Length: 162
Image (tube, rainbow, N blue to C red; front, side, top):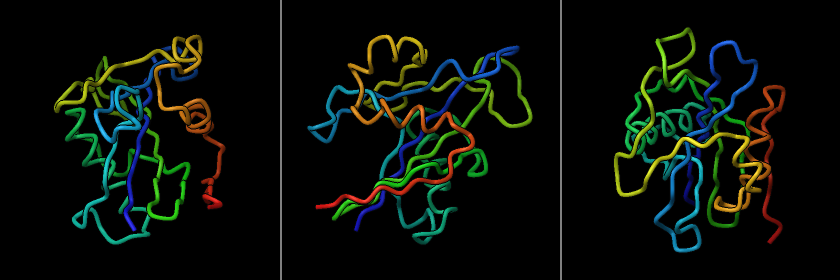
C-alpha cells in the first residue's frame, strides 16, 4: 500500500488572530488532479521512516515542502490532522503555521514558498478560496482547510467504504 502526505502551510499576519493565507500547488498529475490547486505533498519514501509512525509523515512533509516549495521546515513544525484510507493507499494531511513574509518567530520559518519544480506554487487568501467556493481546487479542500484550521481537532481517520 502506498502512503502520501499533503500539507497546508498557513500564514497569520502580525496582529491578526487567525491565518489569512495558505500555500497551494497546482497539480500536473495524476490526470484527475491536473490543473487543480491542492496542498503541497507527495509519496512517503523509505528514507522518511517506517510506517505508520507519526514522525514518518512529518519527515515526509518536511522533505516534500523543501522539494516543492523551496522552504526548509522541521518535522516538528507539522501537525497531522487527518488520514484518508483507501483500498490501495493512505493519504495523511498535515498543517503548519508560520510567518513567510517577515522575520523569524518562535514557531515558523521566514522563507516564502515558491515554485521549485514543474508544478506552480501560489499563496491564496483564505477569503478568496471561500469566495470562489474552492472552484479551482481539489474538491476535498472545502472541508480539509477548515479542519486544518481547527487546532482543537483531534486526528480524524476516514475509511473508504469500497
